[in-house]
Amino acid sequence: MALDNKLGLTSSADLAREEERISKKKAAELFENDVLDRLSAGTFSTLQAIHKYLFEDIYDFAGELRTVNIAKGNFRFAPLMYLQAALENIDKMPQSNFDEIVEKYVEMNIAHPFREGNGRSTRIWFDHILKNEIGKVVDWSKVEREDYLLAMERSPIKDVEIKVLLKGALTDEINSREVYMKGIDHSYYYEGYTTFKTEEL
Image 1 (cartoon, rainbow, N blue to C red):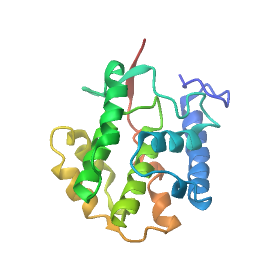
Image 2 (image 1 turned 60 degrees about the vertical axis):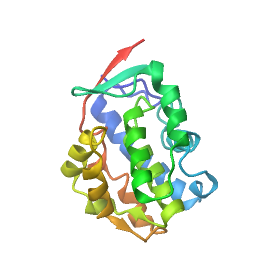
Image 3 (image 1 turned 180 degrees about the vertical axis):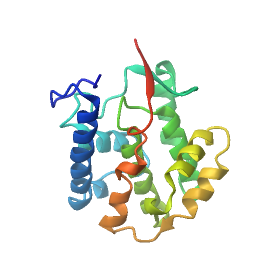
Image 4 (image 1 turned 90 degrees about the vertical axis):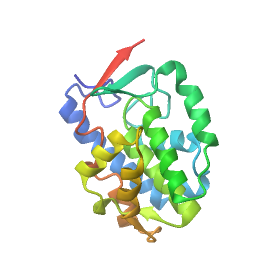
């Protein structure tokens, strides 16, 4: 079953294809229209703006907090009752160096504030912080998908692995459209190859 969507699609495979096509197009527009340059680095309101921009043509909930609890495997993302407080705490986290920025990224992944599209939105948000604070971004083509998944899975307990992995992929090509677009490439989607369990409230 596909999520309710504005496209009228009922097949999850069809929806995934259209979601990839549309969100890539919208992500390119974000870059080309300098939308990110007008947003504050590292705030949840900026992540909301990114998510809304990417998905507003697909989902009614674009840019809105999820209304379900979400789990992946045995890991439960932030429960709804604590989600708002978690996001407020993330907003206050420091982001003056690489380690602090990755720690903030890990916490936002744990929060997983949206029903769908967290991976793509949060990677753009993460690179936006890196660009603004330390003049670097991640070249995602240098990050092996499986290594990334495993490191992110372990990051709530131990974030050394994800820090080493991402640090090795840093580039100063902060204005490269090609480097930017790799962050939303299909091969890096959380959403494309993981199954989320949800509980409607």
